[in-house]
Image (cartoon, rainbow over all chains, first blue to last red):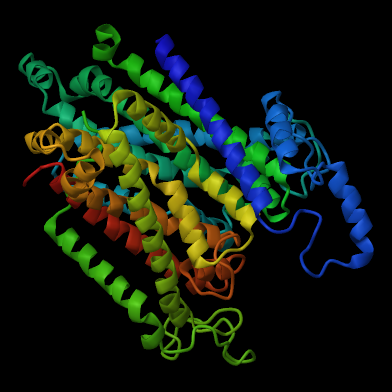
Length: 323
Length: 278
C-alpha cells in the first residue's frame, strides 16, 4: 500500500518535471517571444518591448530562468499571466472549476451508462441485439470527441435550436443570485456534457461488455444458476463485483485521453473553462498560463489515474488478501 | 483478466475495413492527380462560393470557392502522410525503448518503465498543444515529429512485454552461450519476434494519431495554411456548419471511416497476435 502510494507520488512528480522542462525548452528554442510580433516589429516600440521582457525576466540567461521557474513552480508560484495581467493561479482558480463542472457529471453519468450498456451486452453476447449495439459503440469510439461536439452542436443548437450553441451563461440574463443561475448554466452545459457522456459511455461499454461476457462464462455463474438464481441476481451479485476492477482500470487509462478530448469540446462550444483558456494562452504565447494549465492538467490526471488504480486494487479481493 | 474489448469483428466488417483503407491509401498517393480541380486554386469568388454538393462540385465548395472534394483528396496525402510518418517514429522509439528495457537488468527495466508509466499518465493533447504553441504553426513533417515524440509510450510497453517473453526462450539462451553481444541478440534474435505484436499495436496507434492531426489543425495550431488536410477543411467549416454542412460532414466522414476501419482491423490483428484462433 505505502509502496503503491510512494510509486504514484513519484510518478506525479516525474510527470510534472518532464512537462515543465519540455515546455520550457520549447519556449526558448522557438523563435520570437510574447512581446514580439515577428520580423515586422515596429522599431519605435523596441524600448517598450525590452521593458516588458525585463519585467517578466525574459532577458535573463536560460540557466538562471530555468531553475528560477522550477523553484517557483515547486513553491506553487505559477507567475503572472501575460494576457490576463493577473496571477496564473487566479486565472486557473476561475477556469478550472468550470471544467470540473463539465467533466464531473459527464464522468459519473458516462461511466454508469457505459457499465449498464456493457453489462447488458455482455449477458447476451453474440445475439443480434449485442452485435448491433456493439457496432454502434465501436463507431462512436471511432468518432473523435471534437467531431461529435461539432455535429451535436450543429444539429441540436444551430438547426433545431433546442440548446444554446456556445458559452456558459445567457448574455441577456440579469446578473442575479448564484443559485438562480443554475438552470441557465445547466442548459448551456447540456450539449458539451452530452458529448463527453457519449464518448465515455461508448469506451467504457466496450471494456465492460468484454469483462461481463468473460465473467458470465465462469464457474461461479454456473453454480449460481444451478442454485436457481435469476440472471438479474447473478448480474448484480456476482458479475458486477467481478468487473468493477476492470472498469476502474479503464477509467485510469481513459483519463489522459479524456482531458484532451474535454479541452477540445470546450473550445467547440466556447465553454469558458481550462481548455478554452489553454487554447487562448497558446495563441497568445502566454507562457506562464500554458505551463500552469498543462502542469495542473497532467498532475490531476496522474492523481486521477492513481486513484482509479487504487480503487481497482481495493475492488479486487484476490489482490487485497494476496499481498 | 484482459483489458481489451474482445469483440472479434466479423469477416465482412474486416473486408469492408480493408477496402476502405486501400481506397484511402490510393487517394493519399494519387489524390493530387486524380482530383477534379486544383486544391489550392480558388474558383470564381462571385458565383462559386459555398456551393452545396452538385454535379460540378461533388462535395461542394468552400468560402473562397475551392472545390471541397479536391481539397480533401489533396489533404488525404497530407493527413495520412503525417500520420504514417508519426507512426514510423512511434514504432522506432517504441522498439528501441521497449527492446532495451526488456533486455536490461531488473533495475534498469524498472526505471525505464516508470518513465513510460509517467508519460502514459500525461495528457498527450495538452502537451502537444503546449509544444505547438511554442513552435508556432508547423509543417506536416514537424507536426508528425511532435506527434511521434509524444505517442510512443504505449508501443514501448507492448514491445518490452514481448521482448521479455522471447528473451526467456532457449534460442536466445543458445545465442548467449555462444557469446553473442546483447545488442546483436536484441536486433537479430529478439526484435524480429516482436513484429506481429508491433504491427497490431501500430494499427491501434494509428487510430489515435489520425484524429490528433485533425484536431490540432482544426484548432488552428496544427499544419499551417494553405496546405490542405482533413483538419484544414474542418477548420474552414468552423462557424459555418449550419449554412455549409458539407464542409463539416465530408472531412468528418473521412476521419471517422479511417479510424473505424483501423479499429476493426486492429482488433483482428490483436486477436491474431495474442494467439486467439477462431
